[in-house]
Image (cartoon, rainbow, N blue to C red; front, side, top):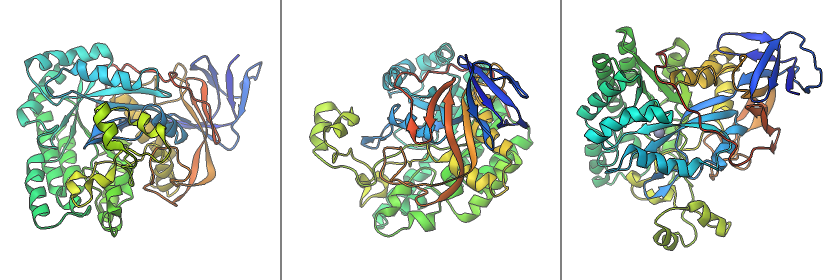
Length: 492
Ligand SMILES: [Zn+2]
């Protein structure tokens, strides 16, 4: 006995077709017209679309950063993702300075194994490259990890130098791996920030002034050129502005294997309307690179429409706006900054430190914002409903391209015979008001508060198991699986 999705319209990256979908076990086994119900469980999808489960390839769950740890973990974060139609994500393992890649991997296994509720993979962030680590890079393929992340920003924390970037790309190219970069010139940022602070410019809005578009464009161009020199596929994460997009366009025009992503917040939020809010409110919107201007929103829509950018993800990394409640300093001392979930479970009023860490100093505001649950909803509403994106282009950006670029297609990212039955029953007419009051992310604000969206997943399936049914959650800890990925993925 399987599950038969009847009378829906299947949307893939290439087609929109009226057909039934039969799921047996964890995979799609048959797609066709007027399939017989037999003794299958019937899901009536009349008036609904069937979309492949969303894939967010840029998340930071349970990430230690700036003196705290991001709120959402592989438990709550997974539930929130699924309610928003995302059934698979790729998170970033961070190599500890002085440690091996495997050390980082063990740490992230411990965060996710036995807890995961949706499927997930890992990128490997290389922070400390030496000969031993260089030799270790290809062994990541045995772990199902095909992508390496390098930071050109965050000086004296994660930032790597050009030699490291170049050498990593050479090794990656030899093994069919892909290199991802956070492209901002960290040296320039490190010079601008103290000057702003010394001039008394300490409010959240000055975070944007410390990271102007030019330093994103410069770093993007540097990485693009190195991709051209080494032949290593490059994926530039969270692109926000014209100088960066232009660098990518130039590289693509030259035939370099370069691709780019942007994140949902960069289409909607601006420095003027959000970061410059009175008081400390702007801290909610501090992330790197910073959100930009309305003009940049237009450029990004153009870039996802014309194929310059291939993916829309989130960079989800959320922190309390009003955090740091309860005796967290004592807890921190006793546990070494671990198990903040345990801390918050002791008393409903307890909160780990959050954005307030940067009051009076924008450089100390933990970088990042929530978005994992919102991405598909706001992109559909603002993209598809407005006619900027076709439903198929939406699927490409949010589901198929992420799966292809990161080596999990066609198992993930489409609805096809043999694919995992990660299926969204999407109601294009259903309205929903986004709010921190009702979202499932563990955070006290939402970047799209009050926004009414039309179109959302009313049922969410992963490998044939129902995770979401309206407001009901049916997921369980440990049922999410690690997705090993294949090297040699295509350059799109
Ligand atoms: Zn990130």
